[in-house]
Length: 166
Ligand SMILES: Cc1cc2nc3c(=O)[nH]c(=O)nc-3n(C[C@H](O)[C@H](O)[C@H](O)COP(=O)(O)O)c2cc1C
Image (cartoon, rainbow, N blue to C red):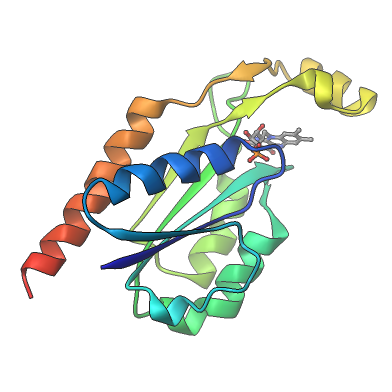
């Protein structure tokens, strides 16, 4: 079973999640290819796809949306999982709803997950840093590896079950 893990990542947090998922899926004996959405990969040669993007200003990264748009016909016949990486707002809510509409319009994922990412506000330009603070944002790495691993195990369970059923 060959699996494509395609991801976008500006600052590395989503890359880390994608790498973690890849390593764990390989430990189940799956043949995993990790692709930073350079658009070189032919979706058709994989049996399953995991696609992830960070959220910036409420949206998925353009290359992740483009990937979905470009590969929509091929993805229709694939097992697809999608995940977003972002922050949790002051009130504990995520800013997840807006970009999900577009993803759902373009593809039918088996499941979509939101994971809290990582952010160092010192890396932001001053205006963004101030806006981030005003919105109650906190610097740090908040990636929940146990939740990411548990989701990966569920993907592996589904993929290995479909292989052994053949
Ligand atoms: C300028 C800026 C805007 C952001 N906008 C959002 C947002 O609208 N919703 C959200 O959930 N997270 C938002 N984030 C948080 C990022 O998605 C988070 O830091 C993520 O870990 C970045 O992933 P990356 O390192 O793979 O690029 C924003 C971060 C920055 C710096």
